[in-house]
Image (cartoon, rainbow, N blue to C red; front, top):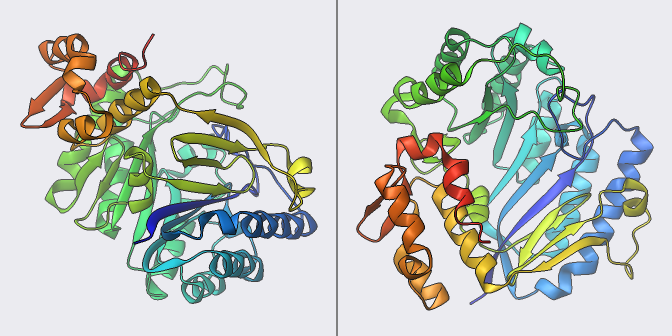
Length: 374
């Protein structure tokens, strides 16, 4: 029986970079886009023999803004993928798309290509907040994009939202979430704004919601979304059966392969990352490796990741699986730390699962840091 594999494909191009974005993304012309897709196909073909014993059950195309590409270029790199890797007939195939770049023609092409899940980057329903973030679209343009996807038969749509935006209030956040709930997407991702070094936002004098306001936003999400959606990860909510299978691979430490600029991979307890230099990547050839980082995880790092990534999910860490994987009990390895966080009411143990409490999710970074090791 073949092993399962996830594939991530990075498309680094954007109309313009958002004020908060620290991803490897930038503006481009048609020639650069074509050259990049050529290099992407070379990379896919170069690696195919090493993964002939795998079947791909999830694909995720991220960016950047993958929907910036013309349909022919999107079809081209998917043809390369399909011809070089075995794709499961029931694979989840996701692609990120931004309002302002999605058209009916593109949506129709995505359906024909085999893409069955679209993630729409909205961030806020308030146009003034979108402008502060540096987004290229309005809420109405998002709504048009959402309707186009529904008309073309997409029945698995994620909407990205953000809390902690400059000028955002609890009222604008909660009303926006109610608006999105009315649209009834299958999945909603809600992330807190982080001011990353090197972004336009970093060091600016921004009027941000205070800690209490932001916590109120986060705590209101389950009540606003109601029973139709369930939280399965610290930032992700879905209808039953529509959890993002590809992202779950990351949190469960399943194997995945990344193609494209800055793409990360995880295979055989080894993490490796492609170059972030577009000139180097475009000159990629079938006899040259584009990895710039290559890290074989030792047993302590593996156990640390198992705990931290597992605690991101609402089901938490399966203590039985930990012992089966590492031949030792998590309580033997992390007993004092676990006991402390249970006493602090940040962790809870139920049967063979250890998970963050609601209070623990508020202080998740503090809890996770205790499993990083010395």
